[in-house]
Length: 451
Image (tube, rainbow, N blue to C red; front, side):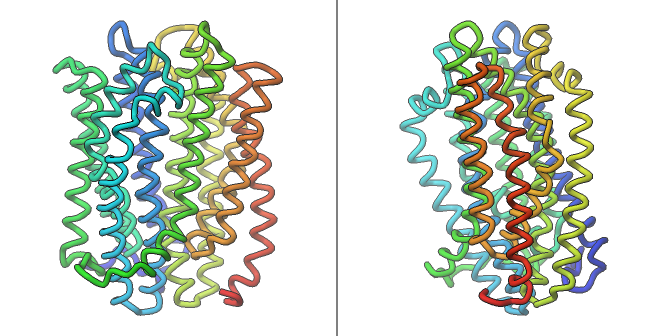
């Protein structure tokens, strides 16, 4: 198959756009079907609000499981791109084969470990007596499709890193469109409720998985999945680079879990479930911000990695500049939308006036500092793409630490509804620190010293 993008020779500005936009669109569509999923659940007759809160509790746990896909996918893809940039196709193939084996093993282990403890885990993560039945039903079915979820997401990174960004986008579109079609059928026509939503998700993930693997096993791919060449050293390198995105995603979801628990604690019996529902809606909007943003900064890692491996410093610098500008443009647009059109978004989930009012307020608070968040993403994902975990991991960890401090301090001082201010606090302080750290480390990094 002809390459969609020549990572080493195409114009950098056009290359960034050609790779970033499909990756961003793919993530946007992925978020859209997640939102549609929750929208349908929120509109189930009589039980919609409680069902939505229950699935909202599952959300961060499901994403934490999905973080394993990024541990391997985002960990292995930059390594593979660097080897392709160096002209070492055989090592690139070994990296891909090791990553495939790791994802298969991890998916089985995750499902086996989590299933027996799912009920106490959901309770710990904010499920109340009212919302636990919905959370348990949804999560039980979802776990059955763990292998499809991890393989489709994780192995898709190895399609994108070969320059096939449109193929990578198609894999996401297949799952998203299918989920949107199946959701109303299983939820309303077959009267399966939250179980139907989970079944639709698993079927959609299965189809995406088949598409991704069929491409990577075919002659269409520049580097195909092979058998053998498995090395613990290679697996260790994949895990070391993938640890940054894994910790970012895992910590983000631990923060959501902690937020749900704090909202239940300070909201009490009268407001706890309502505030968790508001948080679920606000988090859905934040996914519209962060996942496409991650599509921009994560999808373009392959440009940075390939040219870093080829020692093309000029192209690395140019790519970083355009990635940053594109990220800032996207977050500026979403800031305006969050501040002015939150009510339109909330109406997709609920028609209850008081709940809608509180959810709009939560969205406005959470989006106060999304513009500087672009700087954080571009720097951390860029350094990860260059294989520089020693820089990206501390910068990412710092942002989580700031968030956690704010999460526990703010509601203790000003009450449950102030909890949402933890997001903008971390999104202001962390990018400033990351920018300072980035300026300090990049000079030596691009001179290829101490690498």
